[in-house]
Length: 76
Image (cartoon, rainbow, N blue to C red; front, side, top):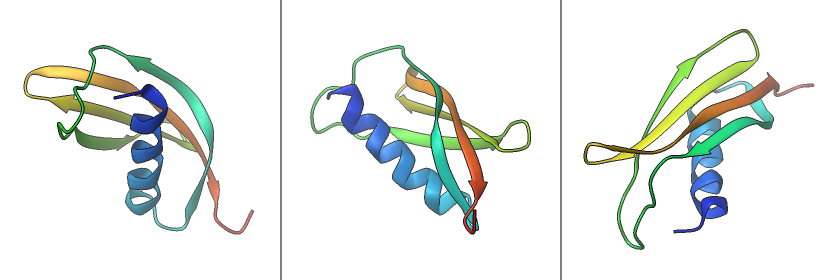
């Protein structure tokens, strides 16, 4: 699956995981392993520094993608 499709899903899930915040940008993203078409990737989010949200996506025992997003208040 193309990285841009994976990141689109990460951003959509992050918006739901951080209510009241808006995704301002992708701070960093590293693709560790390919994700075959039709295979689901599990996502987890953890707060990082203020204004940042770390993410990790995996399938089985392999990390597919990891990185962080910049957040701003939804009213900004």
